[in-house]
Length: 71
Image 1: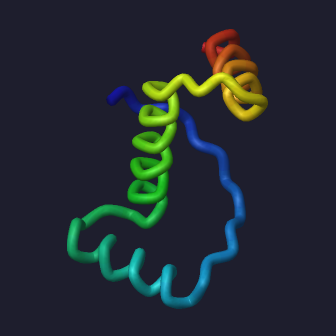
Image 2 (image 1 turned 90 degrees about the vertical axis):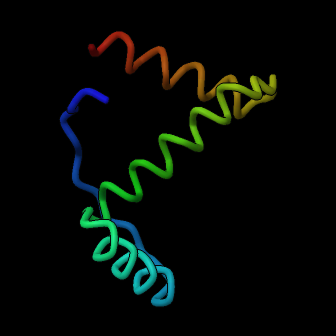
């Protein structure tokens, strides 16, 4: 996958989730950000495959369209 600019954000994690991500990052020699981004990229691909037509799908199409415009 091509490198993209990223944006900084703050998320609040359950302490056990954070510890799991830290350990996973160490074991895979990846950053927690990379693991989280990869997970959500996968979830978005799965969502795209399902193409459920509901309000959330309409919102996703809108966001995706905005991102295509910015490229």
